[in-house]
Structure formats: structure tokens, C-alpha cells
Amino acid sequence: MMNGFVSLVGAGPGDPDLLTVKALRCIQQADVVVYDRLVSEEILALIPASVARYDVGKRCGQPSMKQEAISELLVTLAGKYQRIVRLKGGDPYVFGRGGEEALLLVANSVLFEVVPGITAAIGCAAATGIPLTHRGLSRSVTLVTGHVQDGGEFHGWSGLVKSGGTLVFYMGLERATELRRGLLQAGAPAHLPVALVVAGTTRQQRVEVTSLACLEQAADMLSGLTPVLMIMGEVVQLRAELGHMAETLLQSVA
Ligand code: SAH
Image (cartoon, rainbow, N blue to C red):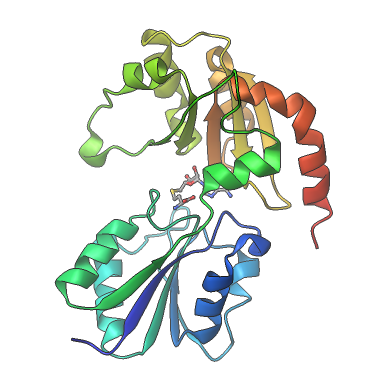
């Protein structure tokens, strides 16, 4: 058994005030922090200066560290340090590949914990005035990733449409055409409201509301901006009434 203890820590969607107390404590007590591109500068500023850091993030156009290499790095660090913090955007177990890292830690008998974080869907919903469920409008919310391993095709469109609930897509806008086609062919209504949320919960937050039929036009307006979350469903209409106050408060965040 190695000495090091690894905390897979969810850093939340961006606003440092949305870190959990436990996440903040982990950061302050760490010997080494491994982080990636989704972790905001404000949160990185909370890491004490004496703490060793590893940036394993993908940056546009630059090579990133492969997932296997990141997991292996954690195992190596567990042999050198006592408290290792693996800081991830949102929640580690929601499209964060935290599960893969956890499996390798278990396989190498490294002790670890998972500190949950506010996932992008939850953070963006609050910051844009879009309740993910709402009586009479949506009885469920489904979190969907746009990434398909090995370039395989996604066959789940009709299941998503049949659910009748809110759909939240974690993916870049480059798949907008495929998404629109897949959902329309599966019977989703053309008018289905969609909110595209860029950098939700931060002062750079930007929101475009459109319909499924016009998804690409709205995506074009935001091209190049990241990260982007898509919230789809009738609940998006509530933003007309609830969005203003959420966004006014966001601008006044210190
Ligand atoms: N583990 C993370 C998700 C990682 S996948 C979580 O729980 O939130 C990366 C995707 O998350 C991005 O492509 C984007 O779709 C979404 N995302 C993360 N943070 C975001 C933010 N602040 N605003 C909008 N989308 C965000």
C-alpha cells in the first residue's frame, strides 16, 4: 500500500464560491495538485504557493496528456506525496473521467476519496434562470455527453426524445448539426427551446436562446467560445422570467 492519499475533487462550474467547503479544505491541505483546463484561474489562485502543481489540461491546439498518463501520474505521485489532489471541473463522476482514474488507483492499492462538485448542468441552470425540472413542464433531466468513443455513431436519440424531459448536452458546438438531425428525426419538435450557455457561473457567461431547428445559427454566433453547455426543453422558457435576476447577480460577483 502506498502512503499517498488521493482526493478526486470536483471544482464546480467556475465560480470559486461554488467550491464545497471540503474541496477548499483539500486544496489548502494538498502537497500536490493535478488540474486541467476546466478549472478556473480564480480557483487555481486558492492553491497555496508552496504546493507542487501539474497542469494536465488540454489547451486548444496543444497536445494534452492522455487519460492513461494522467491516471498513472496520480499513482506515481501517491508514491512521493502524502496528500494528492486531482482537481476537476464540475463533478469528478459526471463526464470527468474520474471513474477511470479511480479504477487505476484501486488497481494500484492507492487510497482515495471522491469529493463531489457542482456539475455544469446544475451550475448553469442556476446562473441562467432555467430550472431543470418544473411542475407541468419537465419531470426528468438527462445529462448527455457528445463524445462517442472510437468515433462510433450515437443511437440513443429516440430514447432521449421519448423521455420528454430536459436534456443537457455536455459537448462542443461542432456537433450541432448531428444533434439537430438526430433529435428531429427521432420526433423532437422543431420549436423545442434550447439555451446555449458559455462559461456558465462566471462573469464571462454568455447565453443564446434558440430553437432546435435553428441550433446551428446560434452555434455559429458562439463559435470558438468554450466551454459550452446545451440545455434543451420547455423549461428554457422560464428564463424569460427568471434569467434577469440570476444574471444581474452574476455581474455583481466580486
Ligand atoms: N465534470 C464536468 C464535465 C466535464 S466535460 C462537470 O461535471 O461539469 C466538459 C464539458 O462540460 C464542456 O464541454 C461543457 O459542455 C461542460 N461545462 C463544464 N463547465 C462549464 C461551464 N462553466 N459552462 C458551460 N459548460 C460547461
